[in-house]
Length: 446
Length: 107
Image (tube, rainbow over all chains, first blue to last red):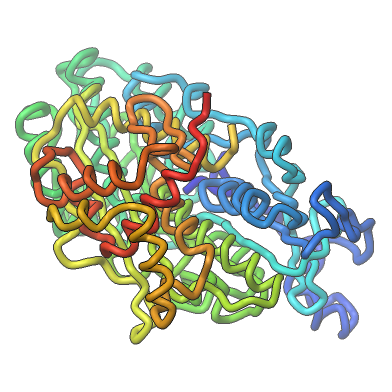
């Protein structure tokens, strides 16, 4: 789920191109979908030869989150002699899953942070940098600073960016630091935690939830539980308002409602159909009323991240990336495989880190077959498991299995499979933490 | 679901693969690997799990199929595996079990 832009608000993190496409000569305009610097620059990717023999192809992976890192690792593990370069903006991976425990004060940000060194040890070239342009015809990407990377296949695991224009005043409020989104783990997670600890007892915290679809459907409700848990213990005269743009809780509904009622009665107030239209200071304005908060956490509406827009792959509702589910290849631009939250989800397929990891394995298998000129797997399967903490130790899950349907060319959940926890329990609290250890290791080879 | 475990075993799996050449799942030699990789998020890469998750690497296919059958039937109570096991077909579970049985457990 975390993707290249882990820190800061996305709009600020993505660099504005120095040149407009119209400033370039016509051939360059055709070749480069976005221009960020003068043409030219050294090429890093040559005809690399590995210990296993000549490379069967060059794959550049953009974004070192759950999707991209997994793809990079599995391309090396399954392809052996695939030349893989992972480009990631940040020095470290910081996990969104488990980061709500940091908000609640039950974990430190370092506990959800991992490095990329193990990926390097399995032969992935890890480059820290910003991709500013993609040339799907010449099959190369350009980084800020001018470095070019040539590819035979490109994997784009860009994550999400925010539709700040949909909430009046939000861009400025986030820039000022008075309001936080904390929907990309990292400094924003720590900022929310710090605001909570600095707040007086008797204060009001508000978290706002956008309409679906958004990254991690149960995430806002888990966060509400973690904030309420902290308030209950440390600031019992305080209140938490949950302003949900949706008509009801969007994941594990009965289980979250039970947690709200049994653990956080008198502290947590859930308001459905409360879409935030405008933010002023720390006042969140809906159609019905103005909510004055001491701490305001706005989870903004989301779309595929900016680099996907610039790559020309956003072709569904001007918001998401359509993919061929057999290969994860963009339906708009050949040779670009798109993973994770940025994709236009198959029916009942959640935008989750777990699912991005599964997307990555479908893509890795298909890319290796494509590079070898073989037919791709016609019957892929993906599955999802998502654990949510409702107290410091009690956890609930939702799980699903998705089989490829050849007739409808999409993944469909299997009737009679999947489901949620019977009740919140501490056994799954341990499993949730083990899940994190296993998936972080599975993606980072660590 | 006891039939699941009776049909398990490498001999059966091999013959299954031989006779099933017209079925799509046998067309791709990497299918077992791909299917098993859907389990890695929780059970570790190639079944080498960490923490409280059950390691699968090196466990015999018979035993894995028996466990899966018990999850599916409800004979073995579970938090989540009864829901996940029902999402895969029996031939898919056979392939997954065969793959994990052949993996070397990490020390």
